[in-house]
Length: 417
Image (cartoon, rainbow, N blue to C red; front, side, top):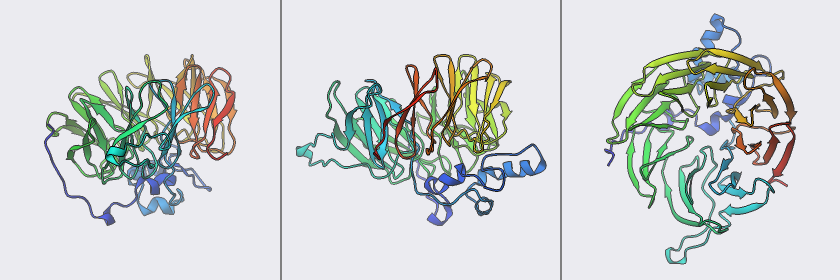
C-alpha cells in the first residue's frame, strides 16, 4: 500500500488563480500586441517574458492584457470508447456517448443511469465541468470534474443502460486526467496532491503530496514510478508507486500545463518557456531542449521517428526523436494559436487552431494540403482520430467531424440546437 503523507494545504489566499480563472489568461490575446503565449523574437525583452511565463497568475500578466477571469468551460477532448462510441461533454457535469457514423446518441449520463433502489442512489449530474478526459477500463468509465467529483459508470456490452456503482468527493480541484494502474486511479490535483482511489469500490487509499503546487498535465506511468509536472514550481518529479516517496526531481523546465508524453526512454514536456523538453524517464536528467516560437501548451505527438508539436504562436514543428528540427509550418491567420495536440490520420497531419482554422499537412514536409475554417467556434480540446476523420469538441460542446483527406467538415452533434 502506498505510504500516507499529508502536507498542510496552503491558505486560500495563497492559491491565486485556479484553472477556471486562468482559462482566458492562457488563451486570449492582447489586441495591441503579441498575444499570450506569443513570444515575439529572441530579444532580451522576449527572455523576460519567458521568465514570467511560469508566473501566469501574477497581476503583471493581467495588466499586460492577457484576458480576464472567465467561467470554467472545460476542455476535455472527445474520447473513443472501447465499443467505438465517442464520449463528449454536452454540458457541465453531463456526457453523451455518440455513434461516430450517424451522430445518434447511444446513452447519456446521467439520464441513462439505472437507479439502484437498494442503495438509494439517485441519478444526477457530476458536480462541475470536465477538463480531465475520461478513463476507460473495459466496460467501466471513470469521470472526474474540476470540482473533484469522481464517478464510475458501468455499462454491460451492448446495453444502453449504465449503472453508477459509486461516487466520491475528492475535496480538491482536478484538471489533469487521472491514470489507472494496478486497480487504482491516481488523480493529481490543483493542491499538488496525488489521490489514489480504489477503482473497485471508490475508497480513497492515500493522499500524497511530495510538493505543493498545481498539477495540470496528466501524469505518466513509467516502470514503478508516476511522473508528474508541477506548474508552480516548474519541476518534474517521479513518485514511487510502491511507497509514495520521491524517486527523483528535476527543475528549470518552465511551467507546464501539457500532458506528459513518453518517447522511448524519454519524457516529453511542453512548456510555457517556449520550449519542448526531453528528460530521462529513469532519473529526470535533461536530454535535450528545443526552443520554439511560443508557448507549447499542448502535448506533442510521437509518430514513428518524428515528434510533432504546435505552439500558441501558430507554428507546427516536426522534430527528430533527439530534438532536431525537420520542418516548421506557420499558420497564416490573424489569431493562429495551436492549443491542441496535432493528429495523424491516414498520412495527413491535422492541426487545429483555437479559432477554428484546421489544416491538413504533409507529415514528411509540412506542406499544407488543405485548409478549412469553422466559423464561430473555440477549440481548446485536442482532436480525436477515428478511421479517416478527426472529431473536434468545441467549448460549447458541439462535435464536429473533419475528413482528413479533404478537410470537409460536418457538425454531427450540437447540444445547443
